[in-house]
Image (cartoon, rainbow, N blue to C red; front, side, top):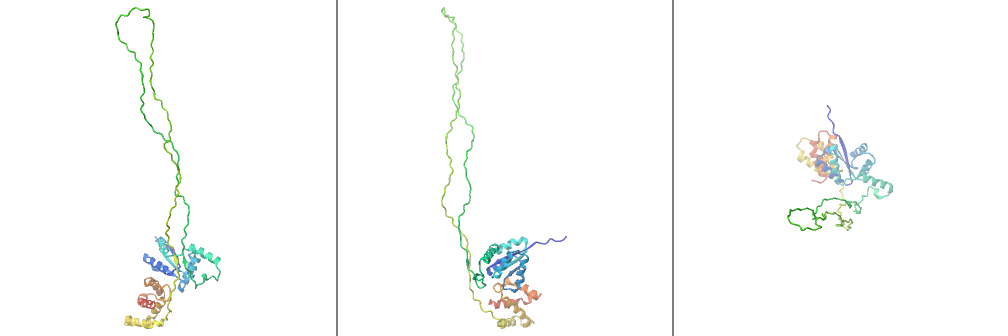
Length: 329
């Protein structure tokens, strides 16, 4: 049974600030991404020309043009060849270091191409723009909730005691034995009537208003403090010393060789390519302004492409030359 291959993706980030790109690169390495899967692309490295052109094969238009235009104007691109499951995390790391929003940049480029003339100084390679964000606070009415009132009818059982009159007619007989005088009306028919009266409960209902419910609005002004972070892109001027030729370091390189490698059996001439390689690294970006921990992996890869299996023997010489030219020592 064949093993299933892990899906891979290439995460690409564009940075206007090269130092921010380097910080993002370092953060990716610290997160555990292999340096061999990461690449830094700029417009001043001849080795990156083919890599930049290759981007058109996996990035569609107009995004790829936006990326390449960014590099052409001094931007830096970081590519990370990672598994599909870790691509989101790689993108999150890059975006936390002022990565360019490609959609917004594409809109900006479209406006520039349509509105600016060729003589506009903003299109000159010798002009950098100072950009500052401004806080714009507006108001928008949004619905927070609603309230309505309505009537409902409910029923409840009530009880109340009522005292009622209850009359009952009864006939009482008692035996009597007495003499009655003779009278012509004695046996005349007579009658008596009594009325039996009962009281019954009579129920009536009256409606009383016991409460009023009214719905309305209470309107009041409130002050809401908006907190936001505004970015500013400044242009810093740095005076860079004139690049000294390789021969200017010849005595330093010889001294290093005599002190550390003079008895190794390897001649200075045999190590000369390593000294030249370290010199070249220190005179170009991004190797010139990056720490050794960040450039070592890429330096090894470039060296091994031309000198397979010899990095470990020449590493100390390359690093010394790189640090000496950068005036680290």
